[in-house]
Amino acid sequence: HLHLSRHLRYGAERRKWRWRFIVPLLRRTYPEADCTIAVSCGVADDLRTLVGLPPELVTTVYNPVVDSELAKKADAPMDHAWFKSGAPPVIIAVGRLTEQKDFPTLLQAFAQVRAQRKARLLILGEGRMRRELTALGHALGIAEDMSLHGFTSNPFAYMARAAVFVLSSAYEGLPVVLIEALACGCPVVSTDCPSGPAEILENGQYGRLVPVGDPAAMAQAILSTLDAPPDRGLLQKRASLFSVDRAVQQYLKVLFART
Image 1 (spheres, rainbow, N blue to C red):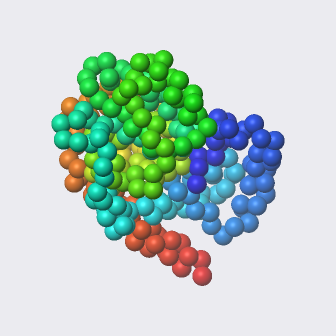
Image 2: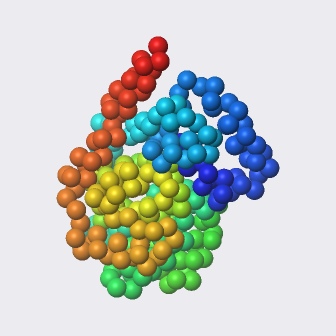
């Protein structure tokens, strides 16, 4: 599910003693399986290298993300002052407030955006870095234009109304929220992290990709997207490739090939 080598190197779990046994355990057990399914080609490549699996034993099946319920939730009514007519554009991010999501880079990028034009930053999610991010927002002078909104059961209504969705992660496996934003028709900017964003966005064709941990590049990509947003219908069409029906067919293909 995750780019494991990156996770073991940079994730918080690297400090937990039991994680030092993960790779030897995988190398002992995974070759016994008939097939291993990875959620992205990047995860599959990492798994082959890290565990030493033969290429034919690893298959990629993208997560089932898009269904009819997502569209209904995106259209649900929402009452938030930042989305009233005539309000500044809202830049949105969704995810746990943890090191992996690298929200400090996003806040620094937003400060540069805010220095050039009116905008607001809304982050949906909760986590242990709330206090740190709040303090950083004050230090950067953007506290009045950013909101750590916390968890919401329906982020799609926000995505559908936002001007830009930003994924600032240091690493992923296949970032589902990026697909969900596309399905809501929201223009996206993402780090080109391992792994998933480049696959989802087809190397930048459906959204701008920027280096990990580069606030200046992220700010410029956000400004460019605000100035020239892509066609929302095109983004939704791209997201349809990650539908539940498509994933089901791919899973069935894997299962039938081994019966």
